[in-house]
Length: 446
Ligand code: GDP
Image 1 (cartoon, rainbow, N blue to C red):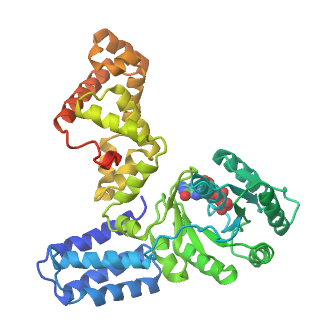
Image 2: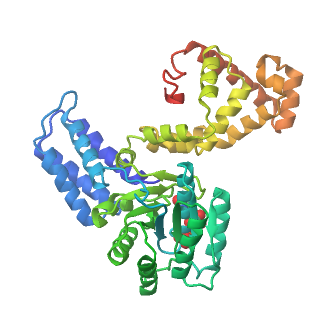
Image 3: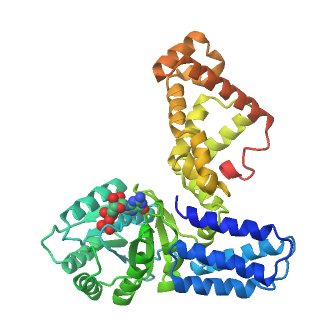
């Protein structure tokens, strides 16, 4: 998981700080020395680390104790605030160009960074906001790129404009504007060519596109796994073609965190989105405060809530109904199936648990305890029940259970155990009426 080692180290530093009643200047300095090491090991730019530690130190030495916080907690609070500031404080969104009927976004990046995938992901996000995007295949050097964009566009149900590989990217970009105008598109997203390394030809081509088409926003996709290289790439692109923002792809991987923490400080340009997987829905808005919270091991409950809320199939009425049924102990196997479906859509159990405060570290243990394969087995059991059985678990006698076991390909003992557990949780839900059912219909967390 991303940031794991950085989070672990920072949490150790904080644990030591918290255990002290009073903090001397030496205590703070010693702790910050460890913070510095942890950040450098996470591949954060060394100048950024130096400035960061200095800023924290200036505020933390001789800190007054605030209501309810001990000095150790105060230092953690300062580290958190400085980390948020480092990543840009504010959330930056793609803006529609005021006064223009078509907003033009140019996507750029090195080959393999995730540019084409991100282009389609962004189109999906804009579409959800009611826009009508047009994707434009300007990468004529990698024939597979055009096909890839077309396939992704189709999946997102977004139009793709291509003139094949025998036209100049500038001409393609110009022609796409005309096409967009005629077909009522209000956002044009240019997928430009990448190279394995930064080279003059690539930069010149991007400059030429910008000189001939009015580009309103230039977004650079960089691979978070490449750490400082990603930051250097961003700096160079910005110097050559002036970028407006960055998308950090592959944040679902084992990145140490350096890129997320340094991009804004080094380039002055904000991170807009982070890529969290290969699926076209795996793109998250970047929130500096939530990211800091995740890095510091304080969890990211807000993103989790967003995921739950943006889960398109969640129907508030249905959810309220489910909560009411739970209170009455009427939660049946159909509800069970529904909640499994929602969980899967949110990226599975481990992804959800990873966003809970303090869970990042323990995730390994939890994952081994709640094996996702076992969950699929449970699902197979429920799917082998008849609709009446799902609605009324009491019907499940021995012969029905053995039929279900055969259907799910498991031993009858497994079915027995599962049904028993299910009945127990039903009882528990009855006893905990206050737990579920949002006051304001805010779903699971209401
Ligand atoms: P391009 O050459 O920059 O256009 O890169 P592509 O869009 O073709 O992506 C390169 C590879 O990275 C593909 O296998 C993508 O599926 C993968 N990829 C892109 N974004 C992400 C991400 O956020 N997470 C993960 N795990 N893979 C990604």
